[in-house]
Image (tube, rainbow, N blue to C red; front, side, top):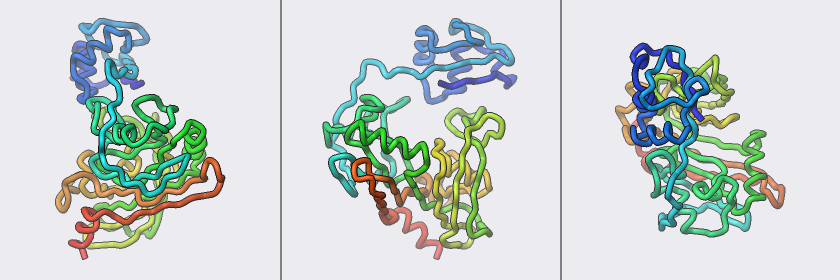
Length: 301
C-alpha cells in the first residue's frame, strides 16, 4: 500500500487517475482506473471517482493491485545452483533477471525458473513467489537462498528479521572514500518526486543501516564491501548516493556514474550466511565476482 500527500502545485486540480499515473509511471492509466473502480484507491479515506479533482494536502492511498487472470508459468531458465538439500537452495542469480512477477512483469523471472526446476518449494509468499525468502534488484547479481518448504521458509525469514541472515556485497562506487570503513545510518522511504526511486527520508523513512569497508582505491573510484543490517529496497544504492559515492553504472541513483559502465549497477551479492533450519548449524557461501564486473576493475588498474 502506498500513501501520497499532495503538495506539488502541478498536481493540484488534476484528475485523480492522472495524478496517480504521474506518481506511478510504471502503471498504465487503465490499470489505475480499474483500481479506482475496484475501491483500491482512497482520497482522505473515502472512495472517489477517477474524475475527482485533487486538492492540496489530499491524502491518497493506493492499495496493492492484484495480478488478475494469470498463473505463474514454468519456464526453462538456467539456474546457477551453488548448494541444495531437502530444505533449501542457494542460487547465484544472474544480472538482468527479475526475482518475481510484479507491475509490468509477468514472466521470464526467477520465480518462473524455480517453478520449472522444482514442485517442492515453500508457499509462504504465495503462488508468484515460490520459495522466495528475500530478493535482489534486477541488475544486482549474486547469492539468494530459496526455501523448499514452509518450515524452512519461516525459519529463514525470522533470520532476516533479527539480522542473523548475513548478506555481503561488493560495489564499485564513484570517487575516493577516505575512511577505511564506516556505517551509514539513514532511514529510507519512497521518493516523493519519483515513485520508481527510494530516498533517505529523515521524517517518514524506515530504519536502514549499511556497513562498508574499503577493499581497494583507484583514481576516481573505490571498491567496497557492504553488509546489510536492515533490508530496505535499494538500500545500498540509496545509502551510497546519500554519502556522495553512488554505485557505478546505477541508472536510478547518482549523476556522472555511467561513464565507464552503463549496463546497470556494479553491485554484487557475493556472500550469504545463515543458520540451517534443520541442522541449526551456520552455513556460509561465497562466489567470485562475475566477469563483467572484474573487466571494469581491470581497466582501472
